Structure formats: structure tokens, C-alpha cells
Image (cartoon, rainbow, N blue to C red; front, side, top):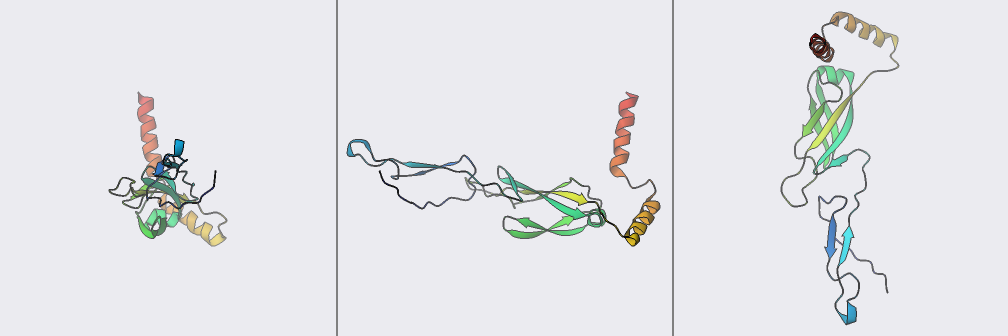
Length: 163
């Protein structure tokens, strides 16, 4: 018996449970035969930001109330670095935006997966008096006319109760 360190090249796209065979690095063969193969089973460490679903990756990004309402652009982390992502006006919290080709490379070649970004709209807290006044003026100017989700919910509820 002896211990031996070997280096292997792990290809892009491996996932937990994938196996790699390293020829000739296993146990010694019986009766003086050649050594067998070493099988390495991969365990991919979880990431703080990204979650993997096959070749796609997912992440959540907080955006401001103003950006969600007015639209704009935000900087998003990707596997390749940073990228800009366009936020359309009226984007709701929980909306998933796809960034094509920003996911994991396929182990068997071909294209890369996508990066799916779930935007979470942050509600302002600890507003000062000027900010509260501005928000109250905004709410008063809107009245009851700018609630797309609420309106569709109540329309569905009316249909359900009507039978």
C-alpha cells in the first residue's frame, strides 16, 4: 500500500454525481497484472449566489422600488464576471429574467445554459419626513389606478365566486 497524489483535469460542466475514470491509477492488478482504474466521483460545492439546475443557473437580485417602477439597468454577477440586465418599467417582485448563454457549459459539448435572475423589489424602510411626504403624494396621485396584480386577482376572484 502507498499513497499517491495525482492531478486530474476536471472538464467544464461537471455536476455532483458525475464520475471520471483515470486509467491505470487504481489498485494493483491481481497476480502481478496491470493496475486498475481510479474512479473519481464529483461533489460540486454549493455557491453563495448561484443555484444550479442542470445547465441553467439561478440567482436572486434585489432592486429598488424606483428601478422596478421606472425601469433601468442593473449590474448582475455572472459566471463570467459582471453583466448589465435591463429592467422594464413596472417589473414586479419575483419576476424571472433570462440571460441567454450565461449558464453552465454542457459537459457533452454544445451550448451553455441560461442564467435566470429573480428580481426582488426592496420596499424602502426608515424613510425620512421628506421621503414619506413624497411617497404619500405619489400614492395620492395614483389613487386606485396602478395595481395590476390586485386588479387581476380581484377579477379572478369575482369569476370564481360567480361560478
